[in-house]
Length: 489
Image 1 (tube, rainbow, N blue to C red):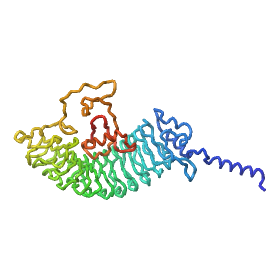
Image 2 (cartoon, one colour):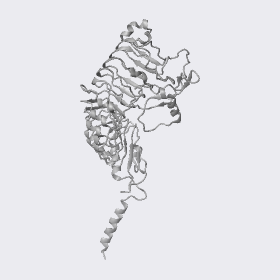
Image 3 (cartoon, helix red, strand yellow):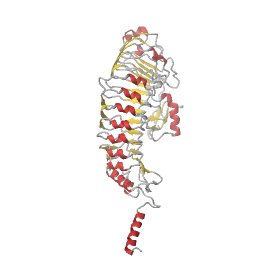
Image 4 (spheres, rainbow, N blue to C red):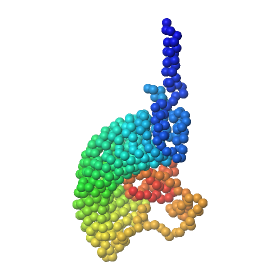
């Protein structure tokens, strides 16, 4: 029989082992509680949104913007943090390395704050992480290599910061990542050709950085790629790889202002391409004459050194909204039937910008519908404008109405009352109505159209009335349901 003091010691050990385990009053994993406190300590919260983080248990007491799994983990009996939703709280400070201790977190959201410092390398320890959302802050430093080894990461959203340095080659290991939203930073160096190994990537948004080197032709091997957006980088001396014309999944190719040279890309082999912008480069030679996808809305070859004639294939595009060929060396005839296959019902419009070329004559008299705007100033053809009856198209700064047609100012409406934020609704069923507009912020990171939402205006208004907007969407744009939608690219 054991001595009494041994039995007493065993009972004490068993008791403490028991009380240190979660009971019916389950709690958050202690190391995650400590991590959350460290995260809170590294942030400044001027509006007190995180005051609840000073009391109780994070998961049991429902700390603000901390979302936990609704059941305890089977392996340890604790609650664990599933999401940090700290967007738009006017937070400043830095991201604490202790974020890496939230090892079961799926969503890390610090969007639209004033956070400085760098992304901690410890984020690479969160192997369950699916969404890394830190855009719209003031982050600096380089991207940690460790992020490239997160096996479940779906989205890297770091745009609109001041992050610098190269894109890590380790990012080629992100087999589940669909979205590279890394635009509007200071990333530099070569785009790693190794990124061509990414099997799930659909969006490559790297515009407005300091990237250089050459455009990797290997990117054409990406099997699911929908958008390449590399505007406003410096690929001086590089040309557009012909292989990009073989990316059959592509919806948008935007290489605006990238110091690119060589021939214009032939994208006639991309069956669903809706948006092409290679403007503000130094491209030379003729515009490829192949037939483009029928759903293309925007073609922009402006501000290059292209020559030859305007391809006849541009006259059979039923969804075209803008064709910009201005500021080149194009010669020959002004096309007179680009609009022939376009249905202009529902305020559809078409802008044809041929300014500052060497166009000398008309193939046929210009008789476009009212919704078509043609710009010809700076061409030799305008020297005979009276003879050809094209003076209206040779103005240097024509007024462009995004809705198409002329603006009717014949009826003057009394101003709206000032006691409410009222605005005139000129196209309301009852003329001169006043209304309070409902503004919906949508952030268009890569719009695939030029004529902002006019073809979809009726559907958009219906969506507004139903209130059926997703809370987690990448489409955001200042719009109003109470008046005609306006916007920019």
